[in-house]
Image 1 (tube, each protein chain N blue to C red):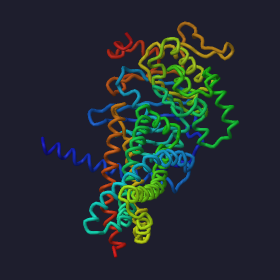
Image 2: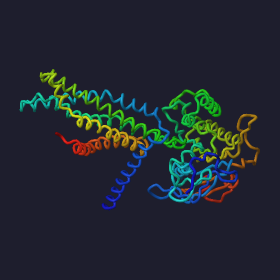
Image 3: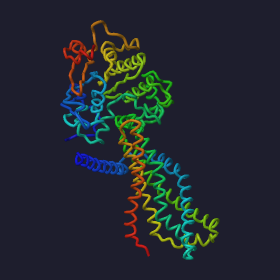
Image 4: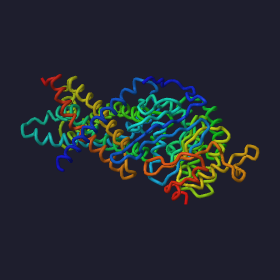
Length: 276
Length: 260
């Protein structure tokens, strides 16, 4: 296996998938959690991973950046095979992908500033540069006033937005969202989705978004960010975002891969039941 | 059925030993490859060293005092109370100082390491750290291991000194014996091999405490209940390992430095 762990330049050429799963299977002391999963994420593409709770969505997301290893199959991240890559070689690759965990996973002993700047601090970026970039990232998620606060003093929605700022700060080449709106009220959920749409339409960062909430998935598809208005607006009737497509899992197997149109017209009984 | 259970248990034990060995090896090797997180080392040295000072001082004084009381009572039967100082200092420096300090520090710090890292695991902070491109073993475990080794070395010296002082206080104020005689006996019969024995042990014990505490913390699963389980396992295994390893180190050191 010839892998250069020090290579940090974008490995994914324009036509090469940013993420490619090929026949991936994973089990934890029992029947497979994921079985024979194959899909790709193209540059600029947003893939929404749907499925009921406990079906293996978060596991799939953790496989994407090597936090978990598959038992079988191959996973390519930025064109590099990561399924058997040594852990220390994975760190530079992971640093190129941002991830938003289900509960935010903020470091509770650090301030919002230090959480958002975590990677920059490790890279020994000068303090004034860090402060400037953190303020810009917090401005993006509309949480400028939380700069010096600790995560414990933030609400669930605010923590999620800080986690998004942390994922965005280094302009990652791939974004992974693990149920970013899970457990939040509808208003806060819409704010989070608006941020994701803004990132998708402003920076065109490829992403995988895990959710079991159809309303969030459809909102991502039927809205776009209007830079002039500075907010998310609904696309004209019948139009959907062409870069946003769907995957659906059922008991660890990928049963759907396609557009919103394909999804709503699917004849698969599980898909129909899920949609209804 | 019983054989299957036995086989599964045996496999689990072997797997745990293998995982622990790899984990402990990686944590040590990280010190010789950049980046090394020196600020974290200093923070941990403060938490482990300064934080454990009071319990080490108290337990050292008490143990030295008890040793003086017990030994004087026994030695008086042979008319040998004059060697109380030698008895207390030898016992404290060669054996009780390192082991007692190790067990005290393990109770305080192996538990805190396991619960802190365990909480970080169940709240996905460790995964977040890995996802942000930072090695959690390098960042969290290696500084704790080296801080624990360093500080346990100095805490053992403090415990030895406090034990001898505690023994002296009991000898003078309770047993009404001669103070200068106690201290001169404590000092004169000490040999370098005794001191080496007493100062080699905390290096191993410090490594055992921090590596076991961090190992159980990093392997936590099952939410807050899992954190509790990891904490208990860390303290139990660290304390038992200290006593178990002490036996072998003592054998080796007695072979290398035979008693006169």
